[in-house]
Image (tube, rainbow over all chains, first blue to last red; front, side, top):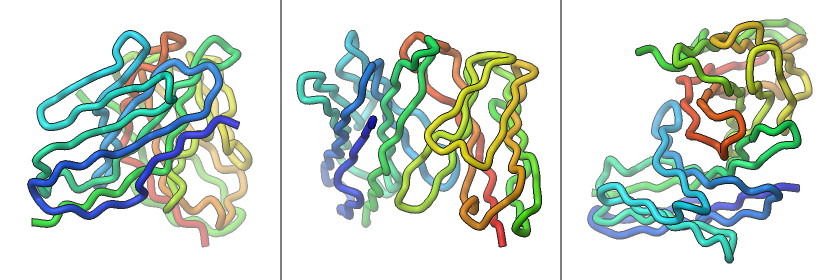
Length: 114
Length: 115
């Protein structure tokens, strides 16, 4: 059974701290790994990591894919209260139909205190 | 640019009632999918479609039907609602059909309560 596990499930930090969120996976037919941020409504896309793009950075956020360890981390430096959200990790799997589907982890709830 | 539009935003049903959650996208995406999100469970795939006329089951398909008669629309039908179907439902779409999972664009969700 395909599995995506995120840790920790929740995290409380102070503004200015640096945080690292973890995602590990046990899947067949891995295609890519995606990170999403979910505030009150719909998840919004952050990064997609593939074999040809194992490190991404955008402002204070960065992510690395370790294909050997079957895991990824999402780093947020100099955290702000606006970073408070649920961070979702998803793995895209190729299906037998020649398409793909995403399997999500349960998410990490990050709370940033002023 | 509307993106992915879901209706209704909220719905209360009685056990045994049926209803259809609507999803439409205006980005000409081939791939569309439905997820449900429950506390502590993350997002779980219900059904997905890689193009008009093609649908497939995800992780939790029981109790739900879908169809894809056009590229734009992907409705989700609850045939006989049960309290276990109380959840937040998200529709999502993307360009890719088999190229490795291009990012999904999500609608704002439908909060369904079954009493």
